[in-house]
Image (cartoon, helix red, strand yellow):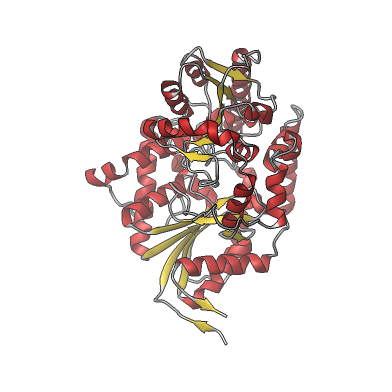
Length: 511
């Protein structure tokens, strides 16, 4: 016999949700009083949503959301007053950085335009929350597109819960989080019995102890494959056009399907044509090449490896792992400046750029400019740049510590025996040898502990941490990057996501 405790009706916004499994998740929540009142979905899945049983629900496409369009016709943006603007000023600075990807050439969206646009978005979401009496937002990923981040900020203003999912490198396993500034606390006890995670997780952890080529993340393999030759991105684009033609996605031919903006226009006014799109595409490729050449000029692989050093692994940008996950340290120069100020003078700082930063099919031109490398290289003579092609594991193994905002390389470093210092929220927060620092005081406290942790054998403790982490996993193919992994059935995904939302909403479902 099953017992069902139903709460009062609760209206929910589901944002950036792929149709399968989310449509069935939303439908299964309905009998429990949890109503999908507003859904943001990809345009090519519009028919699936419209033909669902989600009645009285407003549908907005991701493509429209990027442009600040598609809100309810009667939606009038709520105007923010001075006190409200003060309360979100830090979030606004994050959003301005987040909009770099809308302007990869750094010439089309001024700071003023970005500020106006962000405030418009927050105002629209506040209007939606008020009109539809929204009490919860569910997002399969951390809000990192400016439109979903604006919704997150609107929820902060209204004290509404925002349930999102932190992806992990363990297949279709993610972690539910309710505050993008910190991970849920894991209570660890390394004095008692040390447990071991499942074979799948153990194998992934143990793989990091071997050769780097065997441990390269899947997404980096895909990036490298797509950039093997100059023609590869062209072939990829041509194949995409053919696929969209076969699937009947003709809207992608009328105008370029892009969130890039036109100079002098707000995103919702922009009507970019194919010629302008092609010009930006070429400008992007040329800028990426210039950045690559500029980096190669400052690379010096002859740095003295016998001297103590800290290894700084730069993040690919723009990406969620730095903005908003890194907070103020989305500006990675700030992180390096703090290290230079706090570290003893005899310790060098070795910096390695992320290889994906120079891939033409990525958005690297929106995450770097020539000033970035010039500014970092002039901070101190003890700063050296290593090649993007260098084996990161060999640099990690001889370092005092690895420094990253929130990258997987910090996880790899801690597993291999070198402590990691994270300036942002990392999914492996709380793992042995992993330190979260937010300021100079934190950094000064961490430094004396590094040498002792470098010498200790903590592999069993690390496996125990992963067992505890695994206990919080939500196994579900709920995000675009999970498609094709085929490690969990769709029915199981639907059930797991349903139970997660129910659990968060304090609705008990007992078998």
